[in-house]
Structure formats: structure tokens, C-alpha cells
Image (cartoon, rainbow, N blue to C red; front, side, top):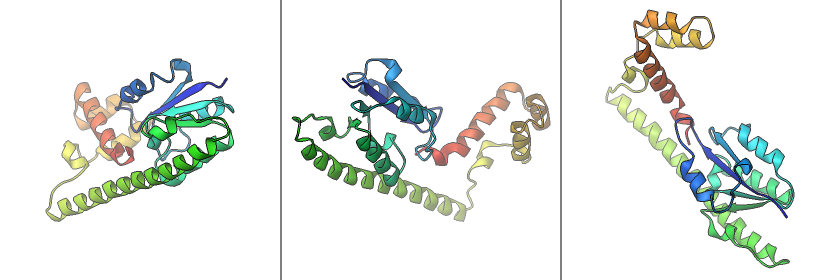
Amino acid sequence: MGINFAYVRVSSKDQNLDRQLESLKPYVTNEKYIYSDKASGKDMDREGFQNLLKAMREGDTLYVKSIDRLGRNKELIKGYLEHFKQEGIRVKIIDLPTTMQDVPTGQEWVLDMINNIIIEVYTSIAQQERETILQRQKEGITAAKAKGKHLGRPALGLPKEWDKLYKEWKAGKITAVAFMDKVAMKKATFYKKVKEYEGLNNDTDRL
């Protein structure tokens, strides 16, 4: 008898996993079999996902809310699905109802064929949507710059030496207190600006 596993992922640390976890409750009740990441789908070395790969065995079943939780692009997703198939691990995707169905022994090929077609279409659409979003972002930035609008970091109202000092702080060359002193900020304001700055720089990796 195989074990039911689940995998959940969001793209950044300030997002939460609750929606995905709620949808998986009917299928995976033991929390020790639920693996998670707060990382971009382009990262192939996601810790939670790599630990999941090591834990699963032939006959196990993996549940995910949507197929794009496995990876960020079509090739990556298909590669993982092929890996699971070769390892004898069943993947059930809640947002793709046909993958949730069970069939009589000996007729698995019918379901596999249907699932392969649906997954091919779904991954293609998901990738196209992401590429469209990125293209619109680029076009929006270009249009805003053409109108003379300020984008990105200046909107945070940071001192012009902020970038240099931030890098020195992260590299351990200066302390947080020294950083605050140089930019003339109190502790609460300083950490608020750090959070805004880091959030802005992480925006392009959130898909």
C-alpha cells in the first residue's frame, strides 16, 4: 500500500500556503507527508521538493493543487512528470479532474493517454500566460520610462547611497547600526525600507 504525499509551493516568503493546504486536506492527512517551498518555480534545487523526491517510493501517490506548483516552465514540469512515471509514482492534480480518477487494473494506459493530452495543453497555456505577463511588464516599464515616470527603487524614497550600503551590510562589512546611522533612519523605518527594497527586487521571480 503506497503513501499519499502532497507538495505545496508559493513563489515568495511573504505569500502563504493556506489555500493549497486546504485543498489537499481530503487526500493527505498526515502532515509529515506534506512538503513545501517558498521559492520560485525556476529553482530546481528547492529544498522541500528535493526532500520529497528522496522520500517517495514506487506505489506512492503525489497530490498537488495545480500543475505549475511543480515547476515554472513546460519542459521542467514534463521532466518531473516523466520522472514520477518511471519511478512508479502516481501524480494527482486537483485542478485537473481526470488525473484524480482511478481506473481498473490493466486499463491505466487509457487514463495516461488522456492525462498526457490535457497536461500538454495545460502546460503550454500556463507557459504562454507567464510569457504574456512578462511581456506586458516590460512594455509597461518601457512606456512609463518614455513618459518620464520614475520606476523601481526611487519610488521607495531611499538615499542614493542605499544600494552600496545595503550590499556592504549583507556582506558583513558594516553593521545594521552603522547602516542606519549613515542613512539617518531610526530602527523601525530602516527595517521597513529594507523589507520594501527586498520585496521590490524579488518581484520578477514571483511567478
